[in-house]
Image 1 (cartoon, rainbow, N blue to C red):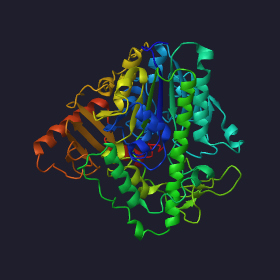
Image 2: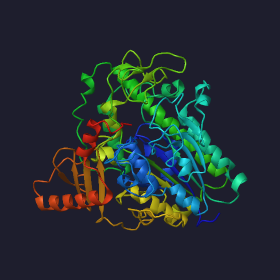
Image 3: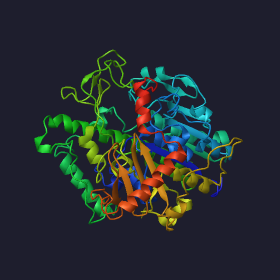
Image 4: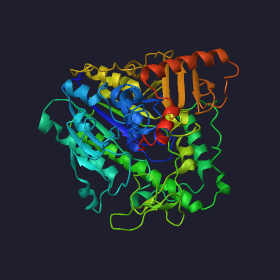
Length: 532
């Protein structure tokens, strides 16, 4: 292996908010990611799509998710909608790098295939990953995940029979094993390892000893915690001194007016424990790279798939009508208490709880709105790149160049020298640009348009300006350099610019196969769409 052929480790968190890491302002201890940031580069204006499956499709292919076949989740919308699986017009990073001589590994969540119970052309093993350990679905029980696979073999029983199983740790174990054994199996051949954690995606599941370390940390409530994060973000340079933070979410009451404060604290204690467990696992991967002498020659990337999640479900028992990922019972037959139930604090397998908008508003500080929306609260993500051999002189710096998911694959191609598409099939060209220049301090192209759409929520960014709408509402216009938290709508003052950017968005949507939201809703009413 030479500096021109670095390894690549791509780590993706699930539903982690912009301010959930210590190096982005959080009180949650994330020493391993903080260390990568201290010796690497942090982006402050990186954005994703607004939801897990579309983000994964875009991250892996360098396309917009609609082009890759996944405009919403992995449900099949039948004729006229999205197939909910990676299509044959795209290639994954694993396919490209594999064709370029890399060994390819995946540990964790896939969630870009409509078929989850039997191998299909959209499974990771058939989209370039030579080694796979993980799940095909979007989430579920951390103590006994369904559909757990090694290669194409279901090994869910291994988790169900192991009283100490915890999915975050299992994902780490597999990734550490890949790195540890790579040279013995493949010599100096470089590798691409995609580590897709489900943490901190609901349900709130964490080990008791991890939760205990956070006991009492949230007794002052979400208003105080969020303000402390914002103050810390200003100290770190993540947030400008004069930038307004979004006010408390309208769905969220003041802490002093909140009932069941012990339960609310517990929700965030478990969430913090989940983030800490993921960070600890990342530290183990980094240490294995160090022990094998490969850390300096590894492009190590960390990001989240979207903003923090404000979803809730009404209180019920598992097995009642609800999302398919909610188990009917624990592995030993006990009932599962779903949703906000103060008599059943979260953390164990017998609960299936969510953070709710209260703590999601903290995770997404300083922005407003959440996962599913393409306002900044739904798409702003921490983004860390550690590569001593390629970025050493930039260690510890912040990069404010605006980049987004379609830019990741071109960046990896430039870093590794792999050629696109690398396969003998006709595929769409990547939509993004390499970030390497920006990461090395060069000025970026701030005048190109960046486009977003999810559930009819839409946005286009060009330079200082962002046009955005909350479907089915009207377009809003923000100067996101002066007003990154999107608090001062200037659409009424700049109607010409609104028309210009709206036209650019419509042109992009037509070119990239964005299905109008009304059409998806109509298919659902006809019973054609199959919700994920």
